[in-house]
Image: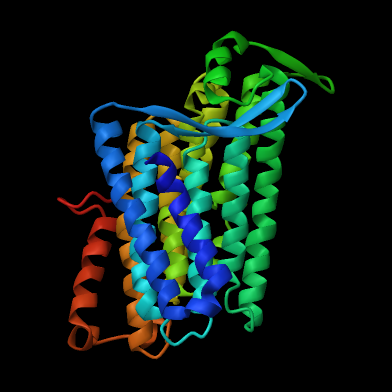
Length: 399
């Protein structure tokens, strides 16, 4: 069952991508969407079984990479943290697939689009179910590649091409830090397995290494390098520039990237590596500072935007800052709770914005919008719900 959750989206992506011309656009839509909904239903059962009943599992699928003394298996790790992410990724992705059937109905390249969406979902599931840093890195890079393909889906538009390239390049900066962190973890602990590394972390407290004329704390350095990767994926200040430009892709892509998948990967990384960060208080202070600064900065910039999708994008950037600030003060449960609730109301806002843009003949300037309650009352109502959740109005679980 665990393997089915991860690999059903890959199966859908392969069918739509390789046989889309043969089976047609309609069949490609149905196959990918149905497989995602099956994966979502299984994820909800896993959430009940694991997160609520405490029945976690580690499933070894196959030997993956063996080189000298180094071994890495393809393993599915299912614990409470994974169970939460499985629900977020599969449920939001399945709803985005369903929404895309109507939103993209005039596009001739629908099989390619749905193939990319499912590939994106598979890469994210590979990331969140990983049991070692290497598998996580492959999923991490898969998410980056799929985001490049989706943001640049309308490749005839120069702006979409530029936005896709910008997202790819900026994320490579963060990924370089993440890769250095993984190399450092293997060099220090001689393993990339999470359990092995986390158990050995307390013994490394106080260990330093010589860097030029300075003695640098080992665990702090490793955590900071890993956090650089998280900053890139989660668009924290300094590496945030790709996020607003990613709006050049179709609206369903914005919902998937900004709500449930790519941007939450950084928060997930910090929470997963919490046993390391807890022994590096200086790194946690840096995480808190970056998160709080991003929350204030992005919210302020968002106030001066006119494009409805860019406003929601900066809002996402700000909310991710809150999550990192929570993780930085060791409130990992609060960070994951906000990640969970934010994914759903932010997806609602993006998809509602797409409906508004569609009804206004692709107008995205909010200054030219008005009287929508009369023309699209249902969309207006659900957008109010999303906005109230974002504002943290009780009983909605927003900020």
